Length: 344
Length: 263
Image (cartoon, rainbow over all chains, first blue to last red):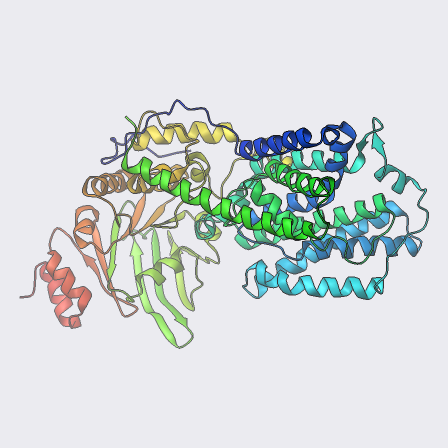
């Protein structure tokens, strides 16, 4: 029910006119970059374009990609989770240990996803209780969780029993003889979570809190709860990736997943998620992760020393930050230009 | 005498040893625009934050239409019909006009467990409201709020409060950084809010803007309400400025009672 009545035209109002321009999806830039990169590598080495190779790259992108999906929500809420890679590792170790203790692998997997979510919950509760950004809290918990992984794994790979059971054969299996199951999980989750971010109240509130936390709070949005939920989601996604890793690799070795958090952040930013919050794209992050994996895979294919891959990943993070900054400057300049020079 | 819409009684708020509000008494009647004035640090922002649920009071009572209420959060205040529009924090610039209008009160499509927003309903309402506030004919509700001018943003924020039938709209510096024409637009919009049944608290540093729109002026100084029944038609800007900057209580009483400057 409204009591609003028609008001006279607002004096000083800018005369807006509908622009006859086609608005391309925000992910277009990243998709074009990926296509150009793949085409270039295919030109350099045609075997790169073989479906088996491309699907293998998709499979490699799947696990860090799951972390990137969670990271999009965290970044959109103007937070960051540095501990995601460590959560991935500890969840994987936890799943393997539960299986070693005799638990059904599917149940162990479920428990480990929940464990990942709990670690995210701890990150969130610490950030809220200490009134600190998640960046600072997760800097600490990253080391703590990594330490715990070393304690439970005793510095060695954990190999669960019964590698011929349905859990392992399903997760390491391939649909149509060539599409890795992990890739299917990754693509499906990317599509679902993209819809969650852009179509649901939760996703909308995440972006509102990231864009202007004070306005969101004044509008009655429970900002702490929203921040907490993004970190829980991040933990759950890292936990899921850890469980799938155990299912596909049949083990979790020390150091695995240690660079996943940075890769996830880089992928999210390459895909158009703003490091300063308020806007994110899950599909963009998935494309960003594919770009990252294509580059890493190409380095191997072109015979570049594997040691350079870490450097390349770091350089991509810096590049992504530079792009994020430039896009932000360009957008603010465009808004100022529009306000001073209204069309028509 | 009719019970006012809002009555704040003996409100005290302290931040550690600092006493921000000291037995402040304040009221707003139905369909009334109250101008809340005071120098920096006078306590008007704290009073508004208490009333909008943003900060808890240390002691005192708040009544809405005679019924005592407890405002623990901004959600509580919104549920009680109190909407606050802060100059820089009213809207989320990266989100669309439609989404800003429903900020914190997003409609959900069935089935509810999927938590999907009813974007179509939001766009339809936004389209109607844009026409009502007279922003422009062609602007689509999906336009980011950041591309609107300052005055238009204020108008959208006020329209939001009116659409959700808020009894009291608190406007914190709504004319700050606005041009002359835009200020007049916002002021006329505040008047139309009152005419359609809403009460407003208007806070502004520019006393001339306050004089143009309010029915009554309340002045705060050092955490206390020092004058609460100044009729803008019966006094002058210079007189109110003197009250804000500090006169003796007798001088204030004389000035308000006489309805003209004391000297």
